[in-house]
Image (spheres, rainbow over the protein chains, first blue to last red):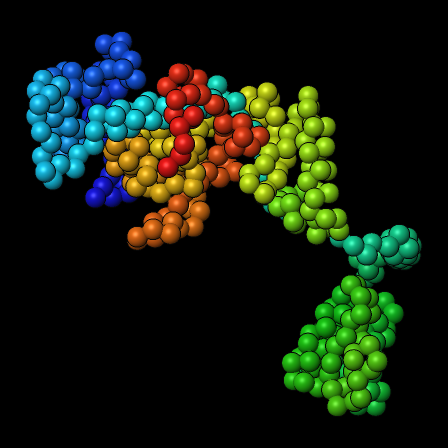
Length: 243
Length: 163
């Protein structure tokens, strides 16, 4: 067996015995339909002999056809030759039909090859599923975002304020929030930040909340992207939005 | 929208019409692309919009696509499979008179042929047929457009009943 990676052996330009036989018919300008195939036995054998080192598997195929041609030739020379009792080789007409069919295959292969060379082909659309735009965009949300930006811009910027050098501790903030949540059950992130916090205060508040969440003291719910965050006590009854 | 062919039944399901009506609509659609840069390609029951072959050079340049190259042996094997499908490897080998392991492997790895089930015969050999990529690479709207007989020998073979 030739493995899938073995190079295809094309023998001296002949791709198999039928190809060689067909080549002879064409060289001699004979008609496949009428040529006496036995007459080609000598020319075929000469060709096969001149073929250098064939792989064993190929040799057997070439020789099998050679033996058939020789037999056909023998029959035409000695018409009285009786068929062997167990003779099971194909007749001249069967071989002719095979050659004919092969000739058509080669012709069709030629036509297909010509189409490839002229590049007469089609192309389909590539590139995966079409990306649909995300749904749920709201013009109103865009407008209100813009007005918030304007409001922020109108405010004095934090950088302009002289830093008071305040310091926050996460532990202290955590304790503060924990006390608040015990008394209030729920509160919003915005109220925790109390208006216009400094960046440091906001960061410490967020870390404190994350820590409380990690410890299972509180639950965090955010109904919409960038919306306010609702903080609830873990043992408190769930808010409606949560269920 | 699809990058792969769509079956007639899928189309029928999406538009909520009987397959028969979809088929008529497809025929109409196909005709409407005449003379445009697109055409409708059919592979069995699957349909797909592809570019017209007349513009292959420009589309190939845009895509930077390489031209498909096949050896003479691969082309012969492909020709047998295209015209005789579904067909087993043994049948291809009987016609070509040579071992076709390698060429069938090459054609399958280039997605020009594919398995089409198995033949109900001893050993249940694999049956091969051509793919929609095959139609595309050779610019055929469907298998009906395979080039027919060119020579007297071809006519004889085509007229002969298939065994």
